Amino acid sequence: MTTTTATAGSALAVPGATLHYRVEGAGPVLLLAQSGEGDADRTVDLVPRLTDTFTVVTYDRRGLSRSTLDDPARPVTMADHADDVALLLAEVTGEVGAAGPVLMAGFSMGAAIGLQVVNRHPGLLGTLIAHEPVLPNLLPPADRAEHIGELLAIQAAHATGGAAAAFPAIARHLGIDPAHDRTEDGLTPQPLTPRRLANFDHFIGTEFTAITTDRLTPAELAAAAARSGTRILPATGRTTRPTVHTYRCALALAELLGTAPVGFPGGHNGNTAFPRATARTLKSLLGT
Image (cartoon, rainbow, N blue to C red):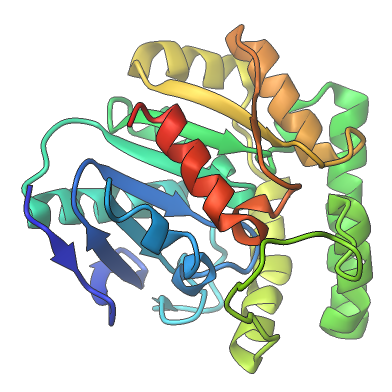
């Protein structure tokens, strides 16, 4: 397979948006789909530890950073995100000469998008690692209502007080304690720049609505998983509190598929806090 390095990134026009993406490394194609406000830059410490084994694809979701919307007033849906992934992977596999299903590791929002891809584009993914997906419909009715209520409360706090009001609620919701959470040494600083703040605004203001109004049911997802042939690996952070709803979503997904969840280093954001250990885990799970 051709070795490809596109550090500066490329652009792909899709219906309603233009996607910014990067392709680095050689080997089987692996798409990393980030959580929250995370764009292609959020995996800066993880990608270099994977490019010896995979052709790694990272991207900015539509509406984040360099992936611009044709009409910013139009709502973004989970179906939009899934279709973007399908178009992006078609473009990349054509560029690098890859054939057959590709690999995807999705974290939180990225995991929810990956499950949508399985439903809307069967056969596209060979393996999907779904780490703590933000997918309330996986939960029983009472827990689902509680999860959606949390997201709506964060969205309301953001609407009245901006990111400063939303961040404490997000930290509680995900079990994150920035002052005390451990990380690996020597990580690239990720300051809260104006661009990241704008991404948080889009994530909370627009994508939360995509999550809370999505209608993909567990029965539909189970049928899609069986139809697609995709190997889905539900995953949890080893230090994520069991009360966190996304953790419980991963457990519900594992139960739905009749499998056991796999453990990843750290908590909900372990892929950015422990990139070295995450790379080792990905290589082990993906058979390399």
